[in-house]
Every structure is written in structure tokens, then in C-alpha cells.
Length: 255
Ligand code: C5P
Image (tube, rainbow, N blue to C red; front, top):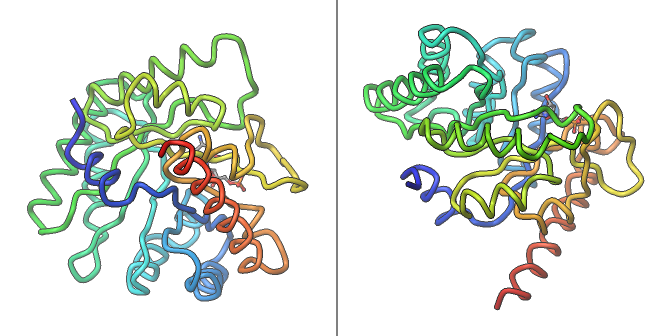
């Protein structure tokens, strides 16, 4: 069964979207990036580096600017702790708007995932905000390609879906298979995005923005190719153009 939140995401937003990973050391750097990118970018990811350095203030700054927050802390703990962490994440709301999306590790197991979904829904109702999309990490994109990786990812994606999550994080290599197995309303978030000619770094299962869109990704997460260059706005615009063109092509082939 398709979760109500996922079908909302896909009905309203089925247009692949860019997420910029604010992987920086200080709140000031993060604020500078949000300010310089905000005319082009709608969703910013706060991960463990920034959250450890600056805590909820980074999240609140982005929300105050009217932008969306993807909180990528990959919760993986005993069910009650993970559920309480998700509840706290939903509670980071500003003016009736909470974070947009949040990650949990599927390795935490069914009970942890189910408790987290329940806690998120309960807290969202209690404080009167939309429940964030909850997505499960399957296998990190820094892990290399192995023969058994696809079955493992499909198994973890199946667990995520059965536990009530809205989608998964997976590389572009697995996106088409995840889509085929779980349907177009199951959200797929894709990191490891590398425009042609950019450094791969520690990522292994990488794809260009166009490849990720063609394979069916909903959210393309880009860090270093934007935040690590001299002109982040120019780089974001170039990636957005590639996303737009690839989407137009896919759309036109379908119609
Ligand atoms: O700099 P780069 O584009 O490689 O950044 C990718 C971002 O996506 C990082 O913030 C990383 O933590 C995150 N991520 C990932 N692989 C996952 C889940 C999240 O690379 N499976």
C-alpha cells in the first residue's frame, strides 16, 4: 500500500528536485550558502557534520528563510531512542512548518522503523505540522558495486516500505529496480551525484544528474560539487539545468 505522504509527494512534486548538502563546519558558512543559493535552491540538507557543530539553529535558519530542510542524521538506535529522536526532529518546527524529510537507517530493523513512523505522526498531529517524509538509508553510496548489492537494497527497501516509511536513499544504479519493484510513489533520494568532469571523492556508486533523473530519482542530493566550488550558485544552476533537460526528455518520451 502506498503511504499517504508518499503519494502526496509524488502527486504534487513529481519533478525531480535538487537537494544541496550543507556539509560545512560552521553555522556561518551554512548561512552564507543558504543566502547565496536561495534564489535557485529550495531544499537544503543538514547532516551530521553541520548538526554536530551548530545543532538545531541551522535547521531553524533554513526554515525561517522559507526553505525546506532534509535532516540527514540516519537514526539507527534502539526503537525508543530512534522514535524519540524523530519526535524531536519533527519538533524543530518554525511558524507551523517542520522539516521536510528525515533519514533513518533500515539496518535498525522493523520495530525501530515502525516506532519512528508512529512517533513522527503523533508529534506532527500534536503540534499541527505536516509529518516529514521518512526515508530509509539502504547501502551507503560510498560502498562499491558488489554482486549482491541490488538484492540487499531491494530487501531493505521492502522493509522500509512495509514499516511505513515513505521511501529510501539509494544510488542511481539501483533506482530503476527500486521503482519497478515498489512503484513510482515510493520516494527515491539519490546521493553520489557527480556532474561530468567533477571529482568523485569517496563516493563509489555515482551518476550524473541526467542519469539519476533518467533512472527515476525524485531527489538528487549534491554536496561537494556545489558547496566545495568557488561559485556554488553557478554550479547549482548548471545542475538544475541538466535536471530540467533530462526530465523534459523523459517526460516527452513517455507522452
Ligand atoms: O559531497 P557529496 O555530493 O558526496 O555529498 C553527498 C551527501 O549525501 C553527504 O552529505 C552524505 O552524507 C549524503 N549521503 C550519502 N549516501 C547516503 C546517504 C547520504 O552520500 N546513502
